[in-house]
Length: 437
Image (cartoon, rainbow, N blue to C red; front, side, top):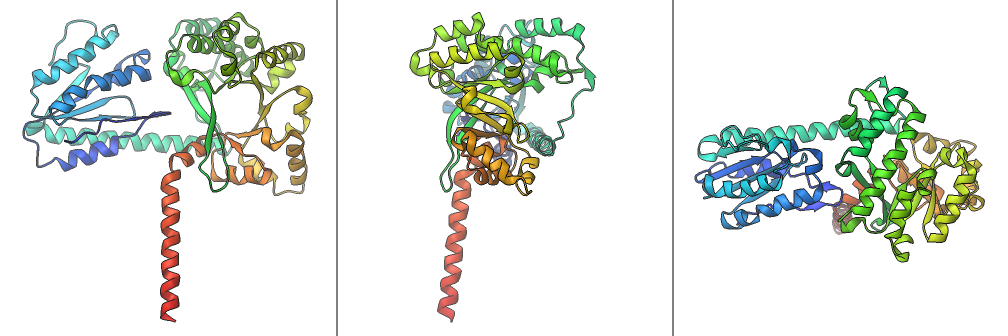
């Protein structure tokens, strides 16, 4: 029985576009009695594309998969493609009806069900429409590759200090109230992202210690105000983050996701840490859970109101939380006295300028500053290239965060096997040369 019922990685769906294309090519001569259905979950509203909805949608297909040698592919955009062997349209439609019922309050599924004009599903009878299915598989692979290229270009731009392209129209003060109201009313759970902070030791797989929770600002902008740049005015955006903070706290207080119960960090405004919304969350957490949570404050926010920060810091530490100072660069780092300010951790932003700085005559000053702060209490964040790991090792920093580290961890097992294979080949060549001599 063929079964590609996809698993889901912590950071999102496993990319099955290539597996989908390989599968369609493989069954090219075995299309009799096969049917496929493309379920367009990506057309649903974002609040219906949360992880638990997608898991339930996949689970609803299990019976059909088991009974008719089914194969399921979950694509990067959350769509599902289901291929069966011997199932009739009626039998497949029983599963589709269950899915329609699950999402029945979505605007796309309003109105009478018309199989011929259905926007929820596209059907394929492979005895007649095999070419259409392989065209879909090729298209989805091309879309995935285009997405990877775009993300790579944005990452390279970020490494070089160039932000990704954004709308040029700035957010105006007159629009702030409307955007804030939209944030308060919108379901932002689908925009919630997580990125782990890893303990990186030489010759050992990086170990995730906790994960930072944050909203995707790019997706938020596309959802709420796609024609404007929310980041164009630093102070207006800082004001918006207060509303985002409160939405985050509501999600955490009401969440039913077991992976969000402990070992995470939140980047909050100082005022948020003193708000009723934070107190409500705090009251739901046990002492051991609070000890596993890190509260991050931005450097500018700390110095904007030192008195409020001091009060918030003492309150949080008394409750058991750890405190982290975020927004530090190699230029501002010498001004930081971690111990006097009462921070447990400090986040240092990596970019190529930091790496280059360590090759100048002032490199020893940076290393001395890191030692004063304590490298064991520092996190090198925004790690976007292999140079970040080299820089961390140079400075003695073992806690790291960034998309390059995420990718490194995902490929760790594969890299280790390749290194072992290369070593074995080298030993084999050495022995052959020795025997020949």
